[in-house]
Length: 473
Ligand SMILES: [Fe+2]
Ligand SMILES: [Fe+2]
Image 1 (cartoon, protein in one colour):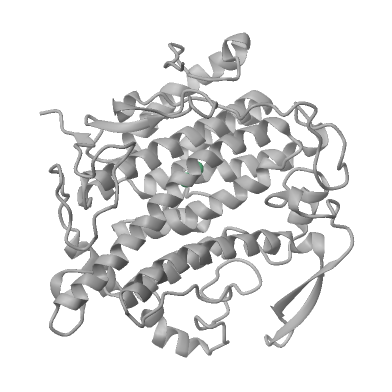
Image 2 (cartoon, protein in one colour):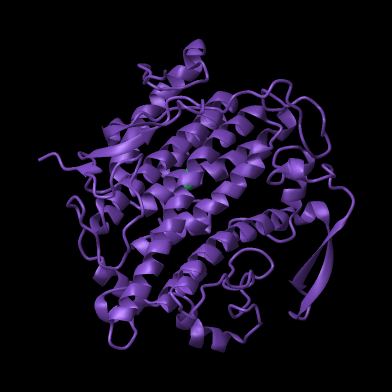
């Protein structure tokens, strides 16, 4: 039987046994709350929302559903259960006991890894803060808020690591997390995709499909870390991340479904005639968010990735499925721009290609989702297929940054890129069109916007048209 803890900060890390840390976090808590009130979901702070709250990590106990006003959400610190006698699973110290404290020589690198992950959590809340004003249904609104409060909890998880293991620097970093702002010209969030606007629901679904999925792969790699508190934190975050990707994948699926229905009903086969989203526009949003998310994995050839791996700080996703955990032998074949700019096959030492190895798993995972969308099209007898563009398309990080490629990955001159950009990425007119069909929120029980199909089932066994978000008055 689980129950909501009465402590100020719910946790399974015995916070009350460490008074200094408890105090530090209790001081950070009001700053977090002011940040939430300023940068969290706009216009819904007083609403009752049917939310899932983590109250522990056991299989039956971690998800507790109830109505809660978001500022009263019980953000807690939960680590997955300890694995007895866990050892470092990769790199130069493979097989040695995992660390419960931060090894001095890895302190800066670990802090950097944690801060980079941490920064993405509040960033996404900021990016999504106005979406409530255009929600397609209460079901979707509730899912948006569930994602938002969990990203808030992920920030708590990271703030715990910073406060608990990095002394004064860590406390300062935790404050900085609350000071940077997504898209701010002077103090932006650290990574590119987290400064992009998410101001319509197709962007939101693509973000949770592709950008949260980058999060999954980063967390899988950090879950392998020799620094055991980081590993345990990330393992529990992954259970929540699965829901975010569900929201994205099924959200796009429902837009695709509705697109097909409306194009059948329309005179000229264009769902826009009836206020739907046409498939080419969906493809453009896919191209945008997939390419922005590919950037988050970093350079194709990376000495940082090699040294994080060597030191046992960040592994590969599901390290146990690899045979050689040192990755000292072997190479990885990469097609990279050579000195003349033409693509050349290069043999890169495996450790230097670990960003690309992580990206491989991500690309495969994305493809599975796209296949499910295409199944809807195939079953409806529609010839159009959605597809992932080439990894070289529209990149801002790594070997292809600043170079021009079409979605097939063929190099093209810059003037062609500029001329055809709007064929491949959302244009101003596309964004305006989406805003026009999402001009007002649908907040009645059972109401649904015209541009999206209903979900097949509701939340936690409740009906689809349940009152998931209740207005006070
Ligand atoms: Fe997260
Ligand atoms: Fe997420």
